[in-house]
Length: 174
Ligand code: FEO
Image (tube, rainbow, N blue to C red):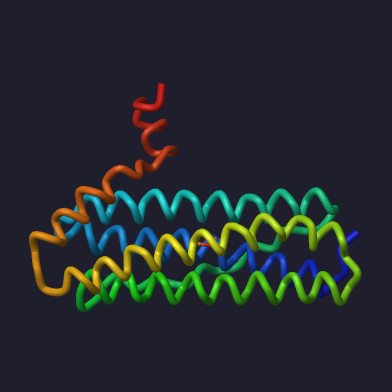
């Protein structure tokens, strides 16, 4: 059984992951409006992944006989000065999520909740990846600077990441 504190913290993280999905979808829309479809596709795939993260917390709370409490999801930002600024926001967001996961691990340790600590290990590793992949794109954008050609090349590169759920719903995942 989860302690009250642990349950509250897990529900808060569930909300943060749902917000993350919304956060990425907002940025996807920003890129889509600018016809940067590769960037938009990458963000849409990320939004789906965040929904997957939220569902992991949702399932885990039930597995431990806890009550899922869904809260209001904050409105995400949809306007940015530039693709670089959008990716700066993305990177900072992931750094914040990492801190949030670390706090959960610390709480699980404090509560001697070994099951939750174990559950969170997947997220600890995932955050290393998330920070690395977003930082790599951010660094490329810094190199590209004001050169549209470089931006279009990166846009093509990012298109390789397809949103799986969406492809499946559109009948393309057979
Ligand atoms: Fe769910 Fe991007 O961390």
